[in-house]
Length: 246
Image (cartoon, rainbow, N blue to C red; front, top):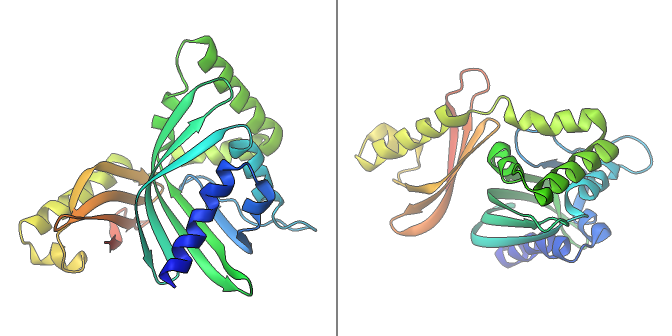
């Protein structure tokens, strides 16, 4: 099962690199959900004859015009899902490269011909990525203008606003500090912190991401690379659940 999961999760970036839209769309279940970035309006099936029309629009907006490469630093399969620590390098037609530090989570379900993706979550921060496109050069201006025009044409005003909503409502710096404080307490041997972390004391690297009501982090556990996913309560903004993957 582990080899099957890792093989299935590798297909998405392979098909993105090959610009194979229908192959990529075919990886997903009919009741798919895509959160990319987490905190923005999710891409979900629509009514009508083509339930994956929204997924195709997502491809046409963000993938089709660009050359995208995934650098996979670490991945951990567990049960029916895989988490990945990646850097996404997007080469835009105007020659601009945008570098996105991200953590990904792919959830799968078995079908007759293998595994299908039911939910893909991409944890990355929108504002730092946008800042890479905002420079006073002709190439950057053309790239930003082309991306905005494409989003309006393909997604409409509602889609643009839904994408931008990733910058609102994030647990942000406060959420990151809450996770880092918890890890520091675990390192000091605090029993409550250790219990919340499943008995381990992860050490955070400098890759800590706040997206929506989640904070994710690249960590090490006794020298072994891993990933941490913290879910925050939407009401209290306190840490509700933590998963550590090694």
